[in-house]
Length: 295
Image (cartoon, rainbow, N blue to C red; front, side, top):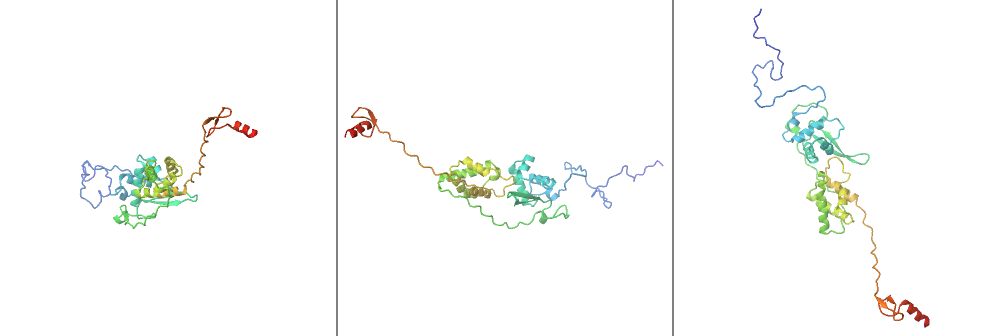
């Protein structure tokens, strides 16, 4: 009665998928020394399902993957513009904007610009947990290469920038001042980084403002005030629109001031020896009047 049964296990063993299969009798090797060991607990609330195609994406940066996970965990309607994300994370607006462009390139974000009934332009952002799939249908945890990265499509030709005002005076000094002003806009907002072609297109418009008695600092404030909080898809187009739509009126015509009164030298009157001002020697006004009365 006290004989132990060697075939009975000493304690209950939990079944681990893939390692305790009833038809698999080979001994599984242990994890490599120094490799990761998962201490997992099943989530029952407040969790988000993330596919390995995102968590292990071979081309996305770590910041882009982290932002994608964070955005997918947010409720519908939450703000995910650059300024909101920069306030939430230690990375600055420039790095966050670059990471969002990565997610947009690989299909994890879709951003479109729409006009509200009030006339304001806003950016609508759609987060895709599986690029290439729409709706709520199920799919494999790891999609194929063609699903994860859609085939590149031919990009439509870039629209021309809006026309800008032209200055009456096209001096090189005025255009140089306008160009320096445009190049310095990125110091006020990193999103206003302009290419050389865009700067050349916008410089005459800025020169038209400067020749209307506006200082460079006043033009800079007009171009950078009340910018939309979301990412600027084409900052040069926004600046061109402002240069044309908000062009101030020309300064009022100024009538030149009359020349100052000419002051004649002092002369001694030949009649009364009194000093008076006259271009030529002679008599003063009183003495001339006396002569006229006598005559």
